[in-house]
Structures are given as C-alpha cells and as structure tokens.
Image (cartoon, rainbow, N blue to C red; front, side):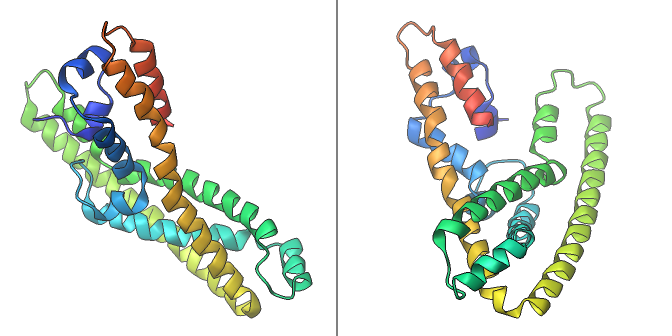
Length: 230
C-alpha cells in the first residue's frame, strides 16, 4: 500500500510535504520512467501497467513513426529529393521529421488511454469504503479486460493498415526507402531525447515549493504539477 511514483507526483501540497521525501534527481527520474520510451517499456518500474503491453506500445510507436513519416513524402518532397540528387537535406528534412514526431507522440498518447491500467488501479487502491470490495475488484478486472481487448483490436487494425501502406510505398518508390528509414530513425531519436529536457523543468518548481521554510508555496507546487501533466 506504499505510494508509487505516480501517486507521489499527484499528491496535493499538504500530503506531499508529509510523504514525498524524494530529491530532485529521484523526482526527475520518476518523470523520465513515465515519459521516455525506452525507460518506460524496458526498465524496472513500480507502476501498475502491464510490462508486455508497454513493450507492445514501444514497438507500435516505431511502426507509427515510420507510417507518419511516409505520409509526409508528398510530390514536393519527392521533387526536393530529386533536386538534391538523393542527398539528405537537413534543412528540409528535419522540420518534417519534427512534425511527424509530434504527430506520432499525440497519437501514441491517445492509444495509451486504451493500453494502460495504472489510473484505474490507483483509483481502486485509494477507495475509502471497502464494502463489497471483492465485487468491485471483479468489476475492475472485467473493465481492464474489455479495455485490453479493445486495445489489441485497435493495434491490429492500425498495424494492418501501416503494413499495407508502407509495403505499397516502398514497392513504388524504391529509391526513397533510405530517406524514409533515415527520417524515421531521426524522429525516433528525437522522441527518445526530448523527455530528458522537458522533465527537467517541473522539479525546479516542485522541490523549491516543498523545501520552502514557511511551507507556503502551494502555487509553485500546483504550477509544477501543471507542467508535469503536459
């Protein structure tokens, strides 16, 4: 019944002053484990999500990134590649890669809604009334089973479409395959890297609020939670 990182991060100010004794580094790492793809999928975590589903999400995100990059290869893009004699033009390709990475991340967040179980389990864990607890536990299990079935159906539909489209694309534009792979790898690396920077900011406000002498920096604490949620 101890708090995990997600529960500690969502405590109100008064409870956090009492229970959250983590340093800035530990808080920063707790955010990385949730937002950085490799850490989230493969490294030990104390969350309430299925390890197998987290790995599937990781693999799905790679396929999604490949697909979104393929969609950005329009007639203008093909013409630009032809003008550049097939060379990789950073000034032109990097903005497209950033856009595709952002779109992939947004879609991935939506897919996570059907894949992750931590929110429901924490809500069950925090129930104050234990009357009919066994019945409510069975309700939770049924709810999660339905959620996971829907998740696998959605993943199957998406991957089937991705496979068909990318196969057609690579079959038609055989000379563009290397560009597609390069763009996808760059986008994937960007997705790996940006959490290391973004997760630095919330802790600056949170730790200062918790270490304030008069314990009166609740506004800073709430602001850190707002940034954390973004």
